[in-house]
Structure formats: structure tokens, C-alpha cells
Length: 155
Image 1: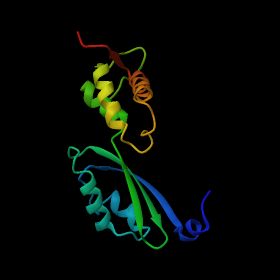
Image 2: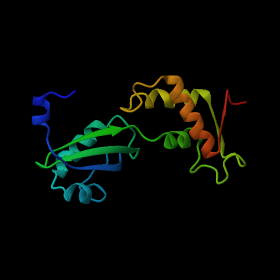
Image 3: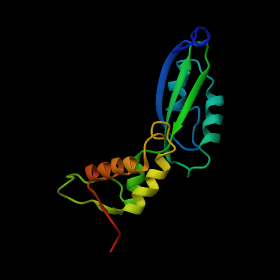
């Protein structure tokens, strides 16, 4: 339960903005500029902070970011790692999944690929308390819906 001091010091939230921005590529141009500008947030401060946080990733990696804009024109944001589908497409070496998953196989990935993706996704805020095994099962399910076959090792 929140204390009275915590309740009184909470800042009123103006909006929650979700964007997909390339890593190291946040600029005050669309899509970032109009999304943050309508809430009168400091664009350059966001761009500098975002680019600094995502410099460890390869350029143009699509990063999901959730920005909480407060009524006093300040903001906080969390950066999540790229989506599982993006990692699976990179691991399989394909541009898109199968048009008919379950019938047409688009490509194959190994359990090692799945494990590596799960290790990266475990650092996400929503996955940090999940076991590695459950994250792997989720990734295998995503691969199946994309038409990507998961094998023990490539022959």
C-alpha cells in the first residue's frame, strides 16, 4: 500500500506514448518529433538520452520505447530490446515469415538460437522475473506461428 507521502509526491501523467525507434537513430523528425511535441516535451533531451542508452545495439535495430509524459512537461522512458520476431527473422536469415504457417516452412533455427534470444529478452522489464525455460517456450511458439521450424541442430 502506498504511503501518504508517495501519493502526494506523484506527478500527474499527461500521456503514455509507445514508439518503435531505430537504435541510435532518434532525431527530432517524425516519428519522434510529432509524438513528443504535442505534449511539449524536450525533444533533444529525449534524443540524446535514447541514443546514449541504445548505443550498445547495432544501428537501425528497431527498439520499442514507452514514454511517460507528465503534466509538468517532464518525461521518463523505458527501452525494451527488439521484438522476438525481429530476432527470429535475423537468426533464420529471412525477410518475413511464412504466408501459411504450419503448411509452408519459411526457414529453420536451432535451439541454440532460441536460447541466445531468450538470454537477451530476459533483461527486458517484463521478462526479468520469468524463467529462461518459459521464455524459450514462448519464443518457440512465436517461431511456429511465423512458419519457422525449431530443430535441435542443423544437419
